[in-house]
Image 1 (cartoon, helix red, strand yellow):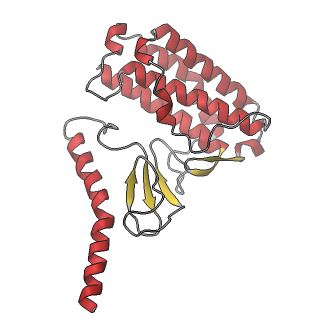
Image 2 (cartoon, helix red, strand yellow; image 1 turned 135 degrees about the vertical axis):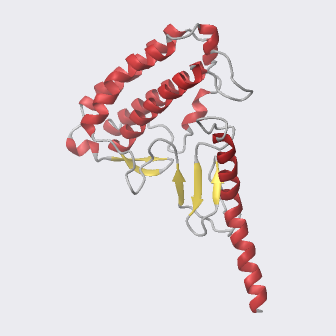
Length: 241
């Protein structure tokens, strides 16, 4: 009976750890040939079962494949900043404002360095082109505005809490849009973001909203936007280097 119990525990541990080992193997392989790990290699969002530690990629399962737990509380591991308990890369309000004020100019400069046709080329099948990266940045900035507007003004409909931000790009055909249109939309979104932020009181910065990662504060939301802009502008420069 003890051997059987030991075999069961070992089998469970292997089921729990193998997805993580697979992610680490793919990550290591990608970094041997590139500076980034693309979504084609590892999903942007990872979910960890808080009962057994199983890691799921891309979407949160209804049941944990390893332990069978309903696991309604999954730990979310996301890029840039996602209200981590350690507050890694959390920004302060004045720092967020300084970063966002310069983002439109950095966005415009990043897209101005190459002919338009180069910005629409996909480096690999399924990999975003530069215009799609830019479109994704627009989507996130506009989503931030909608969420903050709904938080400050309850009469506005709030975006669905479980909305997948990276999926907003689909169906918008960003490669066919001009650089001028992309720049204009991003500039407008950043102006709207800063105008909404200017209304925030100290109490407002601490208000919470339901997101994919759980209950997060306005400062968490704004930190995510500021870090997201920095990371993707750097990605565009790296892609065009």
